[in-house]
Image (cartoon, rainbow, N blue to C red; front, side, top):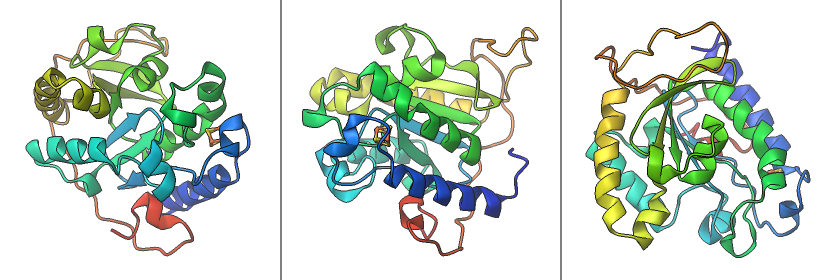
Length: 239
Ligand code: SF4
């Protein structure tokens, strides 16, 4: 767990949200309706990282509110979790025009927001949804078709964490056979939430290990924060 008290981490998240709302670091700020920072449990042990806001997300300022979000919620319920128990963010906080793929320069410009979110929420498990989040956080060019469903361990934002690559729910809506793959991979994700992190295999910071560890403590369902602050609704702090 982060050494910062929970209340301080929430305050810093709200500060980061405000910073993102004023961000002009890449040209995507010109076309956005709203910055989509992320939402959910600020103490979640499981964080999902998707790609970028789409039309509905851009309109509402919230991640995964369309059909892909409904599928994500259904998959979560299938493993006994509710959306409010996890944190959901994207690689990009502003919508690319026409929902095109994120550009490398946009990913690089926006990356500090994501890494700071990970540092502050401090999840033990990060589920990357689709190629862009997976390649960014695993620092690998291996595509999602090759790596989905197989947990990895990476040092991210100052701490070793499980990374579980998953197909993006939007891809599964376009290609129905991927829904079955997602259901299977969510079962593996549920197992991972109970698995301890394996011991480092070497002393440097970028160790990668297979996810074959045994059971440990169960996933936590942390209470929602109660402090009021501008913009905190997007963080899910008021449940
Ligand atoms: S996508 Fe990220 S870096 Fe680009 S303007 Fe939006 S918040 Fe800033």
